[in-house]
Image (cartoon, rainbow, N blue to C red; front, top):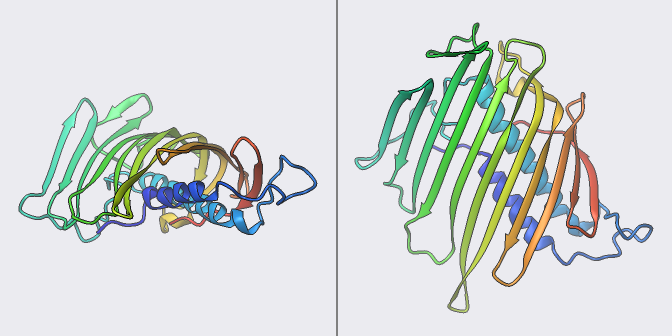
Length: 274
């Protein structure tokens, strides 16, 4: 029922960031401050960054392509499968379409989504979405995932996104906003429960894109703007921080710089919209 989202890529990138600590300092002997992005030890993080870029753009641009279909992390093609204790509520307040989805009958997890969407025509809020008149969109997304099972290895999640899409009917469409995620992963070692916490903060700065509305949303191309990512990983003993800057060029490529404060790794990827 749930399709791949930013959360899937997010967990991969954070896990890789933690395991990447301790990489060899002689990956690039010519410059102690420049890391080799092709070094074997960097590949897990490099692959994870690629995944989180794909997932971030996928969630954002799926909404931009069809904004009257949300929450963005739920596959609505066949409709959500609701159990007797699940909830699906809708309300319209102050220009916002608010959708609450609570799934409690899952075997292992209780999932809650609260998504709010607002549509603009110029400077006026539209009560109903009309594609040929809608010039701007706003999306506020809340998600929590709480484990209810009996396994010793599980993950709890709290996620928030506040995104704005502008110039929708113009050639220079763009979005900007903020995403924040807290991931707590619990596991057991020799009978003792351990925890790793991930604090994730992402800012999207005027990410420009084009959409071919006559075809599938995957025909979207990002051609400008940047993503700025800060991550803190804490296992109770060590705390690791990574700063990642991603700039998009006019050819749709993402130019990445990732640093842990000691080394900087630079490389280019071509997003695969998912």
